[in-house]
Image (cartoon, rainbow, N blue to C red; front, side, top):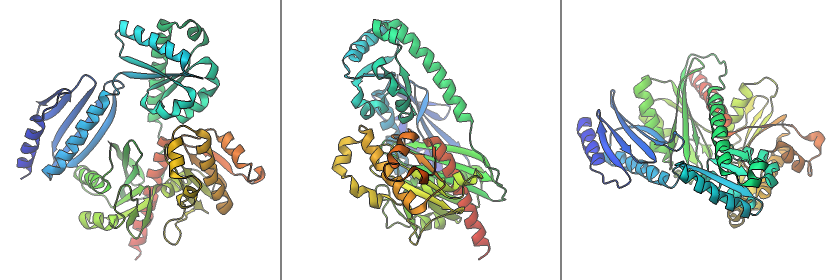
Length: 472
């Protein structure tokens, strides 16, 4: 049956009409080639057939789509293939290196952008230059790889780099800008890109690994949905040490099927694990996940997975896991407030550790600050300012922090908020309402650091669950 489905699926893929490029079979696998992206579909015959799909953007050589699943149902496989093609087509509008110039009004940078586009064309460089006034920067910047700030707003570079942590933010050299020297500007961009890529690679190597002794093999999963891309990172811990990890990248989140695909694949590779821990946004109560944008709250996710895989499953709010993960890797603080406001969200969330223990509450909804703060900013008002008005974001984030300080009085606040990276500005705003002598320490964390703490914290929570089951 598997062989029949595999052959039929391959034939469906190979017979697909795809005007953007070619679809061909190479060594039993499939390759999709376009001028701007390459897709690969690999088939692995283990105890079952595992399908691995990847899409690589040729502009920056980064994976923009990655997943794997057990080939069981043709309809589901075709659905994921269609999503893969959507990703490839979407990259057509993002081909080449997109560079955004910004100045106070956008006029002078607009002129410079035109000259740079002409120079790039002459030199056969796959670069696209655009320009916007600074007050519109954050509304469009995520679509660009490089941000260039004119000398008159160069003082904003530090804040912009912190907010746009995944983009390269540069200050245009005054001499180059004054003379509109396109050749020198292109040379400058290429040199800075080379340094940036090296730095990013070095950061990727440095990862947090806590020394925790246990004998269990635990699959820890961090679901990180956003309004433009979903990442599901997972890591296998054996005797406390991470032994394998991967990150699934998708455009849309189908949390039940996505988690089943991960468990199926890991089961084939590692044969057996003792526990599964899932950290995700939302409120977890008696196995149900209140996360209405991505899952029907009437579905018991814990029961579905435990019945199917016959293994203990623990589902945790990702901020609670992050708070515990941060606590576990340091010895200074016992009372921690972890505050997160993802980019583009109207409300954030809070995870709390008090005296070394995660705070859950009677209904497991401790930390769901969204039930309070959403009433202070209407949906319409937020949408009108999303990704643009940093002051409004600052007001919302500091309101959430003030509420946490007033109730918890923590020793330290871990803040993950790409739109408010200036900790001193955050503290100044809070001190308008709370005396400075009562303020805790602050630690600013990027998305990658939060993911590390989530995976670690969820592993610890899963380990505790196993220990409790062993004593009952």
